[in-house]
Image (cartoon, rainbow, N blue to C red; front, top):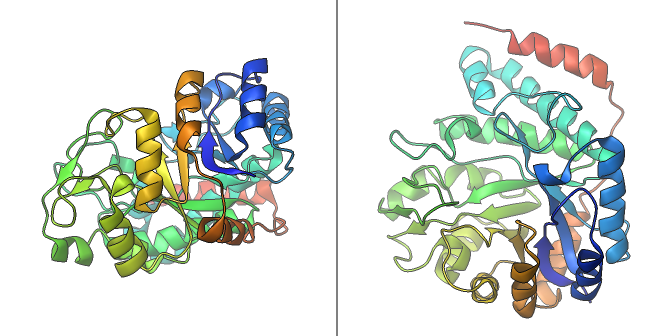
Length: 337
């Protein structure tokens, strides 16, 4: 039986140790990073090798390919794409143009990913940044206007799905107020819940039909002063599943990030207990993955149903002229006030 985990790997080809571990651990899926990327043929081969370990030709293979500074596929093999904030800037000039541009951006990313066999992109970022927040989100955010985030976030979701790739909205219920980088430390947000509800939660509520979402390693003191969203049953049940109304597959952010404390097995157990359907471990450390695997539960019950429902959104890409799409997007991005 598959387990409620997604793992990374160490390099551009699987080691014998990794093959054996994945075959035994049977994770739901895998995630790729820059260390795993060389060229198209190599990535296709690695993706096939990962799927072979779980004997599933449709096993989810995730990547963070947002554009801007978060892009695992890089020039010269792949085209450089703009950060999300560029579409928010365009929205201030021409909202309909911005929507089509964001759609094309996602559709072209999906075109790149589908060609490699990658079927999940951890995008869009729906966080609403505030002045003075840590730059870990920064220009990865679409806008500081929550209504614009909803509009353009919808375009990104549609573009990915039309291209045969599943989107993951992040970082629910909102990372935009964090004054620390959760890769390095645990952010704490003291904003009243009513304000969070009227601002930070709005994009996630507006796009709650997204098939998948990723949690924030952020403490919201007005909701649960002790635990970050990823390991907080209160945040998951009351806010993410309750107020936001998200019924899809809930993924943890990377368990190896320094915002979380304790052994990896403890982190995995806490995230699943809180209500995360799938836990993600990214850095490819074999010792850490083995620790996570000790607590990665079988994928069954409600989590299995949500996983199957998410994968049910995978469809063959719609007809698309990538060259024409590239030209049109470049034209849009030249638009100035």
